[in-house]
Amino acid sequence: MPPDWLRRRLGDGLAGVVLFSRNIADAAQVARLTAALRAENPSVLVGTDEESGEVTRLEVAGGSSRPGGYALGVVDDVDLTESLARDLGGDLARAGITIDFAPSADVNSNPDNPVIGLRAFGADPVLVARHTRAFVRGLQSAGVAACAKHFPGHGDTSVDSHHGVPVVAESGIEEALHPFREAIAEGVKAVMTGHLLVPSYDAERPATLSTKVLTGLLREELGFDGMIITDGIEMAAVSGAYGIGGASARAIAAGADAICVGGENFDEATVIGIREAIAAAVAEGLLPEERLADAARRVRELAAWAASSGSPAPADGRIGLVAARRAIRVTRRSTAPVLPLMGVPHVVELSPEMNLAIDRNTPWGVGRPLSVLIPGTTVTRLTVAQATGPELERLIIEATGHPLVVVVRDVHRHAWQSEALRHLLSARPDAVVVEMGLPARSDLGSVHVATYGSARVCGQAAAEVLTGSL
Image (tube, rainbow, N blue to C red; front, top):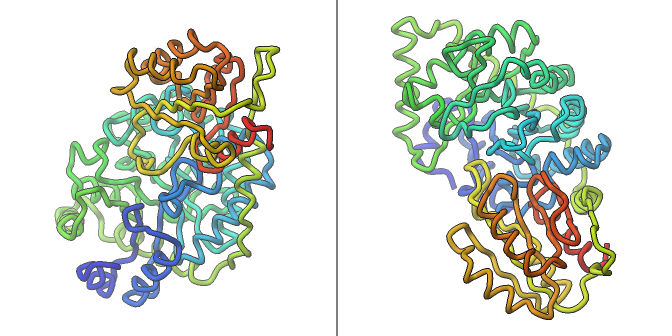
Protein backbone atom coordinates (compact mmCIF):
# COMPACT_ATOMS: atom_id res chain seq x y z
CA MET A 1 0.00 0.00 0.00
CA PRO A 2 1.17 3.60 -0.55
CA PRO A 3 3.43 5.08 2.13
CA ASP A 4 2.12 7.93 4.24
CA TRP A 5 4.30 10.53 2.54
CA LEU A 6 2.86 9.60 -0.85
CA ARG A 7 -0.71 9.76 0.44
CA ARG A 8 0.01 13.21 1.85
CA ARG A 9 1.48 14.51 -1.38
CA LEU A 10 -1.38 13.09 -3.45
CA GLY A 11 -3.74 14.99 -1.18
CA ASP A 12 -1.71 18.11 -1.83
CA GLY A 13 -2.02 17.69 -5.59
CA LEU A 14 0.65 15.28 -6.81
CA ALA A 15 -0.68 14.37 -10.25
CA GLY A 16 0.75 10.96 -11.03
CA VAL A 17 2.24 7.73 -9.74
CA VAL A 18 4.16 5.07 -11.66
CA LEU A 19 4.12 1.45 -10.51
CA PHE A 20 7.24 -0.68 -10.83
CA SER A 21 7.37 -4.44 -10.52
CA ARG A 22 8.41 -4.07 -6.88
CA ASN A 23 4.96 -2.53 -6.24
CA ILE A 24 3.06 -5.41 -7.86
CA ALA A 25 2.06 -8.82 -6.53
CA ASP A 26 -1.03 -9.61 -8.59
CA ALA A 27 -3.94 -7.88 -10.32
CA ALA A 28 -6.17 -7.85 -7.23
CA GLN A 29 -3.47 -6.24 -5.11
CA VAL A 30 -2.82 -3.61 -7.80
CA ALA A 31 -6.54 -2.78 -7.90
CA ARG A 32 -6.50 -2.24 -4.12
CA LEU A 33 -3.36 -0.12 -4.41
CA THR A 34 -4.76 2.13 -7.16
CA ALA A 35 -8.02 2.51 -5.22
CA ALA A 36 -5.99 3.69 -2.22
CA LEU A 37 -4.18 6.21 -4.44
CA ARG A 38 -7.48 7.56 -5.79
CA ALA A 39 -8.87 7.86 -2.28
CA GLU A 40 -6.28 10.60 -1.82
CA ASN A 41 -6.54 12.13 -5.31
CA PRO A 42 -9.45 10.94 -7.50
CA SER A 43 -7.86 12.32 -10.68
CA VAL A 44 -4.39 10.81 -10.19
CA LEU A 45 -2.77 9.31 -13.27
CA VAL A 46 -1.43 5.83 -12.56
CA GLY A 47 1.08 4.49 -15.06
CA THR A 48 3.31 1.47 -15.58
CA ASP A 49 5.62 -0.10 -18.17
CA GLU A 50 3.49 -2.94 -19.50
CA GLU A 51 4.72 -3.48 -23.04
CA SER A 52 3.90 -7.21 -22.94
CA GLY A 53 6.70 -9.61 -23.81
CA GLU A 54 10.04 -8.97 -22.13
CA VAL A 55 8.97 -5.77 -20.39
CA THR A 56 6.07 -6.69 -18.12
CA ARG A 57 5.05 -5.36 -14.74
CA LEU A 58 1.61 -6.87 -14.12
CA GLU A 59 2.90 -10.37 -14.88
CA VAL A 60 6.46 -10.05 -13.65
CA ALA A 61 6.09 -13.01 -11.27
CA GLY A 62 5.15 -15.57 -13.90
CA GLY A 63 6.13 -14.02 -17.21
CA SER A 64 3.91 -12.31 -19.74
CA SER A 65 0.88 -14.04 -21.21
CA ARG A 66 1.43 -11.97 -24.37
CA PRO A 67 4.44 -11.83 -26.69
CA GLY A 68 6.25 -8.55 -27.24
CA GLY A 69 6.33 -6.21 -30.18
CA TYR A 70 8.79 -8.04 -32.40
CA ALA A 71 6.73 -11.23 -32.40
CA LEU A 72 3.67 -9.20 -33.39
CA GLY A 73 5.67 -7.63 -36.20
CA VAL A 74 6.76 -11.06 -37.44
CA VAL A 75 3.12 -12.18 -37.60
CA ASP A 76 2.27 -8.80 -39.18
CA ASP A 77 -1.46 -8.97 -38.57
CA VAL A 78 -2.57 -5.50 -37.45
CA ASP A 79 -5.95 -6.82 -36.34
CA LEU A 80 -4.17 -9.26 -34.02
CA THR A 81 -1.97 -6.48 -32.65
CA GLU A 82 -4.97 -4.24 -32.03
CA SER A 83 -6.93 -7.05 -30.36
CA LEU A 84 -3.99 -8.01 -28.15
CA ALA A 85 -3.49 -4.37 -27.10
CA ARG A 86 -7.22 -4.03 -26.35
CA ASP A 87 -7.04 -7.16 -24.19
CA LEU A 88 -3.98 -5.76 -22.42
CA GLY A 89 -5.77 -2.44 -21.93
CA GLY A 90 -8.66 -4.28 -20.31
CA ASP A 91 -6.34 -5.89 -17.77
CA LEU A 92 -4.74 -2.53 -17.02
CA ALA A 93 -8.05 -0.71 -16.71
CA ARG A 94 -9.47 -3.31 -14.33
CA ALA A 95 -6.36 -2.87 -12.18
CA GLY A 96 -6.90 0.91 -12.08
CA ILE A 97 -3.98 1.85 -14.35
CA THR A 98 -4.74 4.77 -16.67
CA ILE A 99 -1.57 5.24 -18.73
CA ASP A 100 0.65 2.53 -20.15
CA PHE A 101 4.17 3.46 -21.21
CA ALA A 102 3.78 1.51 -24.44
CA PRO A 103 4.13 0.86 -27.28
CA SER A 104 7.79 1.06 -28.21
CA ALA A 105 7.66 2.98 -31.50
CA ASP A 106 11.39 2.51 -31.98
CA VAL A 107 12.69 1.07 -35.25
CA ASN A 108 15.23 -1.58 -34.26
CA SER A 109 17.46 -0.94 -37.25
CA ASN A 110 20.62 -1.80 -35.29
CA PRO A 111 20.65 -5.52 -34.37
CA ASP A 112 23.31 -4.81 -31.74
CA ASN A 113 21.00 -2.43 -29.85
CA PRO A 114 21.35 -3.41 -26.17
CA VAL A 115 18.10 -1.93 -24.87
CA ILE A 116 15.38 -2.09 -27.57
CA GLY A 117 15.68 -5.32 -29.57
CA LEU A 118 12.51 -7.38 -29.32
CA ARG A 119 10.64 -4.55 -27.64
CA ALA A 120 10.27 -2.96 -31.08
CA PHE A 121 7.84 -4.23 -33.71
CA GLY A 122 10.75 -4.68 -36.13
CA ALA A 123 13.44 -3.04 -38.24
CA ASP A 124 11.20 -1.71 -41.02
CA PRO A 125 9.80 1.76 -40.21
CA VAL A 126 6.63 1.20 -42.23
CA LEU A 127 5.88 -2.08 -40.43
CA VAL A 128 6.67 -0.49 -37.05
CA ALA A 129 4.36 2.42 -37.87
CA ARG A 130 1.33 0.30 -38.73
CA HIS A 131 1.68 -1.85 -35.63
CA THR A 132 2.30 1.21 -33.46
CA ARG A 133 -0.99 2.63 -34.71
CA ALA A 134 -2.79 -0.68 -34.10
CA PHE A 135 -1.42 -0.94 -30.56
CA VAL A 136 -2.45 2.64 -29.79
CA ARG A 137 -5.97 2.00 -31.11
CA GLY A 138 -6.39 -1.16 -29.08
CA LEU A 139 -5.03 0.20 -25.82
CA GLN A 140 -6.95 3.48 -25.95
CA SER A 141 -10.21 1.77 -26.89
CA ALA A 142 -10.05 0.22 -23.41
CA GLY A 143 -9.74 3.66 -21.81
CA VAL A 144 -5.99 3.42 -21.12
CA ALA A 145 -3.75 6.12 -22.55
CA ALA A 146 -0.99 4.84 -24.82
CA CYS A 147 2.46 6.42 -24.67
CA ALA A 148 4.68 6.05 -27.75
CA LYS A 149 8.35 5.83 -26.85
CA HIS A 150 11.30 6.58 -26.96
CA PHE A 151 11.09 9.81 -28.97
CA PRO A 152 12.68 10.52 -31.41
CA GLY A 153 13.67 6.84 -31.73
CA HIS A 154 16.04 4.63 -29.74
CA GLY A 155 16.36 1.85 -32.32
CA ASP A 156 19.47 2.83 -34.26
CA THR A 157 21.74 3.10 -31.24
CA SER A 158 24.33 0.90 -29.59
CA VAL A 159 24.41 2.54 -26.14
CA ASP A 160 21.95 1.92 -23.30
CA SER A 161 20.70 5.32 -22.04
CA HIS A 162 20.52 3.89 -18.52
CA HIS A 163 24.30 4.21 -18.56
CA GLY A 164 25.34 6.70 -21.26
CA VAL A 165 24.14 9.03 -24.02
CA PRO A 166 23.22 7.28 -27.28
CA VAL A 167 23.72 9.28 -30.47
CA VAL A 168 21.18 9.07 -33.31
CA ALA A 169 22.74 9.17 -36.77
CA GLU A 170 21.41 11.93 -39.03
CA SER A 171 21.02 9.48 -41.91
CA GLY A 172 18.32 7.51 -40.11
CA ILE A 173 16.35 10.19 -38.29
CA GLU A 174 13.47 10.41 -40.78
CA GLU A 175 12.91 6.65 -40.67
CA ALA A 176 13.03 6.76 -36.87
CA LEU A 177 10.43 9.55 -36.79
CA HIS A 178 7.97 7.80 -39.11
CA PRO A 179 6.25 5.62 -36.44
CA PHE A 180 5.89 8.65 -34.17
CA ARG A 181 4.26 10.65 -36.96
CA GLU A 182 1.82 7.79 -37.44
CA ALA A 183 1.16 7.44 -33.69
CA ILE A 184 0.34 11.14 -33.53
CA ALA A 185 -2.00 10.76 -36.53
CA GLU A 186 -3.70 7.89 -34.64
CA GLY A 187 -4.31 10.17 -31.66
CA VAL A 188 -1.80 8.79 -29.17
CA LYS A 189 -2.35 10.53 -25.85
CA ALA A 190 1.25 10.65 -24.66
CA VAL A 191 4.81 10.47 -25.92
CA MET A 192 7.82 9.48 -23.83
CA THR A 193 11.12 11.16 -24.53
CA GLY A 194 14.34 9.25 -25.09
CA HIS A 195 17.60 10.38 -23.54
CA LEU A 196 19.17 10.51 -27.00
CA LEU A 197 21.49 13.00 -28.64
CA VAL A 198 20.17 13.98 -32.08
CA PRO A 199 22.93 16.16 -33.60
CA SER A 200 20.87 17.06 -36.65
CA TYR A 201 18.49 18.91 -34.29
CA ASP A 202 20.57 19.62 -31.20
CA ALA A 203 24.23 18.73 -30.92
CA GLU A 204 24.50 19.67 -27.24
CA ARG A 205 21.54 18.35 -25.26
CA PRO A 206 19.78 14.98 -25.24
CA ALA A 207 16.21 15.03 -26.59
CA THR A 208 14.68 15.01 -23.09
CA LEU A 209 16.41 18.30 -22.29
CA SER A 210 16.25 19.88 -25.74
CA THR A 211 13.79 22.66 -26.62
CA LYS A 212 14.72 22.13 -30.26
CA VAL A 213 13.62 18.48 -30.12
CA LEU A 214 10.62 18.58 -27.76
CA THR A 215 9.13 21.94 -28.73
CA GLY A 216 10.56 22.55 -32.18
CA LEU A 217 10.33 19.01 -33.56
CA LEU A 218 7.66 17.18 -31.56
CA ARG A 219 5.25 20.05 -30.87
CA GLU A 220 5.69 22.37 -33.85
CA GLU A 221 6.89 20.18 -36.72
CA LEU A 222 5.04 16.95 -35.88
CA GLY A 223 2.03 18.71 -34.35
CA PHE A 224 1.75 16.65 -31.16
CA ASP A 225 -0.56 18.29 -28.64
CA GLY A 226 -0.76 15.60 -25.94
CA MET A 227 1.26 15.00 -22.81
CA ILE A 228 5.04 14.61 -23.07
CA ILE A 229 6.61 12.55 -20.30
CA THR A 230 10.29 11.85 -19.80
CA ASP A 231 11.91 8.47 -19.61
CA GLY A 232 13.35 7.76 -16.16
CA ILE A 233 14.98 11.06 -15.24
CA GLU A 234 17.41 9.31 -12.90
CA MET A 235 19.08 7.62 -15.87
CA ALA A 236 22.72 8.59 -16.31
CA ALA A 237 22.24 10.01 -19.81
CA VAL A 238 20.48 13.08 -18.33
CA SER A 239 21.02 13.08 -14.57
CA GLY A 240 24.76 12.53 -14.90
CA ALA A 241 25.42 16.13 -15.92
CA TYR A 242 22.67 17.97 -14.03
CA GLY A 243 21.47 15.74 -11.20
CA ILE A 244 17.90 14.48 -10.97
CA GLY A 245 16.47 17.86 -9.97
CA GLY A 246 18.42 19.85 -12.53
CA ALA A 247 17.52 17.43 -15.32
CA SER A 248 13.84 17.58 -14.29
CA ALA A 249 13.72 21.38 -14.45
CA ARG A 250 15.49 21.46 -17.80
CA ALA A 251 13.13 18.81 -19.21
CA ILE A 252 10.06 20.87 -18.25
CA ALA A 253 11.67 23.99 -19.72
CA ALA A 254 12.37 22.10 -22.95
CA GLY A 255 8.72 21.07 -23.35
CA ALA A 256 8.09 17.99 -21.19
CA ASP A 257 4.90 18.00 -19.11
CA ALA A 258 5.62 15.21 -16.65
CA ILE A 259 8.72 13.71 -15.06
CA CYS A 260 9.05 9.96 -14.69
CA VAL A 261 11.25 9.01 -11.73
CA GLY A 262 11.51 5.92 -9.58
CA GLY A 263 14.90 4.29 -9.44
CA GLU A 264 15.81 1.72 -6.84
CA ASN A 265 16.96 4.42 -4.39
CA PHE A 266 13.81 6.52 -4.85
CA ASP A 267 12.23 8.10 -1.75
CA GLU A 268 10.43 11.24 -0.60
CA ALA A 269 13.68 13.19 -0.60
CA THR A 270 13.90 12.66 -4.36
CA VAL A 271 10.44 14.20 -4.82
CA ILE A 272 11.34 17.16 -2.63
CA GLY A 273 14.58 17.66 -4.55
CA ILE A 274 12.77 17.69 -7.89
CA ARG A 275 10.08 20.08 -6.63
CA GLU A 276 12.65 22.48 -5.19
CA ALA A 277 14.80 22.37 -8.34
CA ILE A 278 11.76 23.20 -10.50
CA ALA A 279 10.74 26.07 -8.17
CA ALA A 280 14.29 27.41 -8.21
CA ALA A 281 14.39 27.21 -12.02
CA VAL A 282 11.24 29.36 -12.16
CA ALA A 283 12.71 31.88 -9.70
CA GLU A 284 15.97 32.05 -11.65
CA GLY A 285 14.30 32.49 -15.03
CA LEU A 286 15.44 29.14 -16.45
CA LEU A 287 11.85 27.85 -16.50
CA PRO A 288 9.11 30.32 -17.49
CA GLU A 289 6.11 30.15 -15.17
CA GLU A 290 3.73 29.90 -18.14
CA ARG A 291 5.59 26.78 -19.35
CA LEU A 292 5.04 25.21 -15.93
CA ALA A 293 1.34 26.08 -16.06
CA ASP A 294 1.07 24.66 -19.58
CA ALA A 295 2.64 21.39 -18.43
CA ALA A 296 0.20 21.11 -15.53
CA ARG A 297 -2.72 21.78 -17.90
CA ARG A 298 -1.73 18.94 -20.22
CA VAL A 299 -1.46 16.52 -17.31
CA ARG A 300 -4.93 17.54 -16.10
CA GLU A 301 -6.38 17.11 -19.59
CA LEU A 302 -4.99 13.58 -19.86
CA ALA A 303 -6.36 12.72 -16.42
CA ALA A 304 -9.79 14.00 -17.48
CA TRP A 305 -9.68 11.86 -20.65
CA ALA A 306 -8.68 8.78 -18.68
CA ALA A 307 -11.55 9.29 -16.26
CA SER A 308 -14.16 9.38 -19.00
CA SER A 309 -12.92 7.30 -21.94
CA GLY A 310 -13.37 3.74 -23.13
CA SER A 311 -14.37 0.61 -21.31
CA PRO A 312 -12.43 -2.62 -20.88
CA ALA A 313 -13.55 -5.56 -23.01
CA PRO A 314 -13.92 -8.99 -21.40
CA ALA A 315 -10.55 -10.68 -20.95
CA ASP A 316 -9.57 -13.06 -23.77
CA GLY A 317 -7.01 -15.20 -21.98
CA ARG A 318 -5.86 -16.99 -25.15
CA ILE A 319 -4.93 -14.26 -27.58
CA GLY A 320 -1.35 -13.98 -26.32
CA LEU A 321 -0.64 -17.68 -26.83
CA VAL A 322 -2.26 -17.55 -30.26
CA ALA A 323 0.07 -14.70 -31.22
CA ALA A 324 3.13 -16.47 -29.82
CA ARG A 325 2.31 -19.63 -31.76
CA ARG A 326 1.90 -17.67 -34.99
CA ALA A 327 5.28 -15.98 -34.50
CA ILE A 328 7.30 -19.22 -34.23
CA ARG A 329 9.67 -19.86 -37.14
CA VAL A 330 11.44 -23.23 -37.56
CA THR A 331 14.49 -23.81 -39.78
CA ARG A 332 15.65 -27.40 -40.45
CA ARG A 333 19.02 -28.38 -41.85
CA SER A 334 18.98 -32.10 -41.33
CA THR A 335 16.99 -34.94 -42.80
CA ALA A 336 17.04 -36.66 -39.39
CA PRO A 337 13.58 -36.70 -37.79
CA VAL A 338 14.63 -34.73 -34.71
CA LEU A 339 11.19 -33.23 -34.14
CA PRO A 340 9.17 -34.05 -32.26
CA LEU A 341 11.73 -34.87 -29.62
CA MET A 342 12.04 -38.58 -28.96
CA GLY A 343 12.80 -39.38 -25.36
CA VAL A 344 13.36 -37.22 -22.29
CA PRO A 345 15.39 -34.13 -23.26
CA HIS A 346 18.18 -32.24 -21.58
CA VAL A 347 17.75 -28.45 -21.83
CA VAL A 348 20.64 -26.02 -21.48
CA GLU A 349 19.61 -22.36 -21.17
CA LEU A 350 22.32 -19.71 -21.67
CA SER A 351 21.21 -16.70 -19.66
CA PRO A 352 22.73 -13.27 -20.40
CA GLU A 353 22.46 -10.25 -18.11
CA MET A 354 19.50 -8.14 -19.24
CA ASN A 355 19.19 -4.37 -19.45
CA LEU A 356 17.46 -2.47 -16.65
CA ALA A 357 14.15 -2.12 -18.53
CA ILE A 358 13.63 -5.88 -18.19
CA ASP A 359 13.03 -7.12 -14.67
CA ARG A 360 15.71 -9.73 -14.03
CA ASN A 361 13.39 -11.82 -11.90
CA THR A 362 10.92 -12.41 -14.72
CA PRO A 363 11.00 -16.13 -15.57
CA TRP A 364 11.78 -17.11 -19.15
CA GLY A 365 12.95 -20.10 -21.13
CA VAL A 366 11.74 -23.37 -22.62
CA GLY A 367 12.73 -25.74 -19.84
CA ARG A 368 9.76 -25.10 -17.56
CA PRO A 369 6.95 -25.57 -20.12
CA LEU A 370 8.82 -28.49 -21.71
CA SER A 371 9.00 -30.18 -18.29
CA VAL A 372 5.22 -30.03 -18.12
CA LEU A 373 4.84 -31.65 -21.54
CA ILE A 374 7.65 -34.19 -20.97
CA PRO A 375 8.00 -35.05 -17.28
CA GLY A 376 11.58 -35.74 -16.25
CA THR A 377 13.10 -33.08 -18.54
CA THR A 378 16.42 -31.90 -17.13
CA VAL A 379 17.00 -28.12 -17.19
CA THR A 380 20.33 -26.40 -16.56
CA ARG A 381 20.67 -22.61 -16.76
CA LEU A 382 24.13 -21.10 -17.16
CA THR A 383 25.33 -17.49 -16.81
CA VAL A 384 28.53 -16.15 -18.33
CA ALA A 385 30.50 -17.16 -15.21
CA GLN A 386 29.07 -20.69 -15.19
CA ALA A 387 29.44 -21.57 -18.87
CA THR A 388 32.95 -22.98 -18.48
CA GLY A 389 34.52 -25.70 -20.60
CA PRO A 390 34.37 -28.33 -17.83
CA GLU A 391 30.72 -27.54 -17.09
CA LEU A 392 29.79 -27.81 -20.78
CA GLU A 393 31.65 -31.12 -21.04
CA ARG A 394 29.76 -32.41 -18.00
CA LEU A 395 26.45 -31.48 -19.60
CA ILE A 396 27.43 -33.14 -22.88
CA ILE A 397 28.15 -36.38 -21.02
CA GLU A 398 24.90 -36.18 -19.05
CA ALA A 399 22.91 -35.63 -22.24
CA THR A 400 24.33 -38.71 -23.96
CA GLY A 401 21.44 -40.76 -25.29
CA HIS A 402 18.96 -37.92 -24.77
CA PRO A 403 17.75 -35.12 -27.06
CA LEU A 404 19.69 -31.90 -26.38
CA VAL A 405 17.96 -28.53 -26.54
CA VAL A 406 20.09 -25.36 -26.24
CA VAL A 407 18.23 -22.12 -25.51
CA VAL A 408 19.96 -18.82 -26.24
CA ARG A 409 18.96 -15.17 -26.01
CA ASP A 410 20.50 -12.65 -28.40
CA VAL A 411 23.40 -15.00 -29.05
CA HIS A 412 24.85 -12.64 -31.68
CA ARG A 413 25.44 -9.95 -29.02
CA HIS A 414 27.17 -12.18 -26.47
CA ALA A 415 30.51 -13.77 -27.37
CA TRP A 416 30.32 -16.18 -24.42
CA GLN A 417 26.99 -17.54 -25.65
CA SER A 418 28.39 -18.01 -29.13
CA GLU A 419 31.40 -19.87 -27.75
CA ALA A 420 29.30 -22.06 -25.45
CA LEU A 421 26.91 -22.88 -28.27
CA ARG A 422 29.81 -23.75 -30.60
CA HIS A 423 31.22 -26.06 -27.92
CA LEU A 424 27.90 -27.86 -27.44
CA LEU A 425 27.15 -28.18 -31.17
CA SER A 426 30.61 -29.53 -31.94
CA ALA A 427 29.80 -32.49 -29.70
CA ARG A 428 26.08 -32.63 -30.48
CA PRO A 429 25.39 -31.41 -34.03
CA ASP A 430 21.91 -32.93 -33.67
CA ALA A 431 21.01 -30.45 -30.93
CA VAL A 432 17.96 -28.23 -31.32
CA VAL A 433 18.68 -24.52 -30.85
CA VAL A 434 15.91 -22.25 -29.56
CA GLU A 435 16.60 -18.52 -29.95
CA MET A 436 14.46 -16.43 -27.57
CA GLY A 437 16.10 -13.16 -28.50
CA LEU A 438 16.72 -11.55 -31.87
CA PRO A 439 17.59 -14.39 -34.27
CA ALA A 440 20.45 -12.84 -36.23
CA ARG A 441 21.39 -16.34 -37.44
CA SER A 442 19.21 -19.35 -38.22
CA ASP A 443 21.98 -21.75 -39.32
CA LEU A 444 22.72 -23.05 -35.83
CA GLY A 445 21.82 -26.59 -34.84
CA SER A 446 20.06 -29.29 -36.83
CA VAL A 447 16.81 -27.48 -36.06
CA HIS A 448 16.59 -23.77 -35.22
CA VAL A 449 13.45 -22.48 -33.51
CA ALA A 450 13.01 -18.69 -33.37
CA THR A 451 10.39 -17.42 -30.91
CA TYR A 452 11.04 -13.67 -31.36
CA GLY A 453 10.48 -13.18 -27.67
CA SER A 454 11.13 -14.52 -24.19
CA ALA A 455 7.64 -14.12 -22.73
CA ARG A 456 6.11 -17.10 -20.95
CA VAL A 457 3.85 -17.78 -23.92
CA CYS A 458 6.84 -17.73 -26.29
CA GLY A 459 8.46 -20.49 -24.23
CA GLN A 460 5.21 -22.44 -24.18
CA ALA A 461 4.81 -22.15 -27.97
CA ALA A 462 8.40 -23.33 -28.47
CA ALA A 463 7.82 -26.31 -26.16
CA GLU A 464 4.75 -27.23 -28.19
CA VAL A 465 6.84 -27.17 -31.37
CA LEU A 466 9.50 -29.38 -29.78
CA THR A 467 6.96 -31.97 -28.68
CA GLY A 468 4.85 -31.86 -31.83
CA SER A 469 1.78 -30.65 -29.96
CA LEU A 470 1.55 -27.41 -31.97
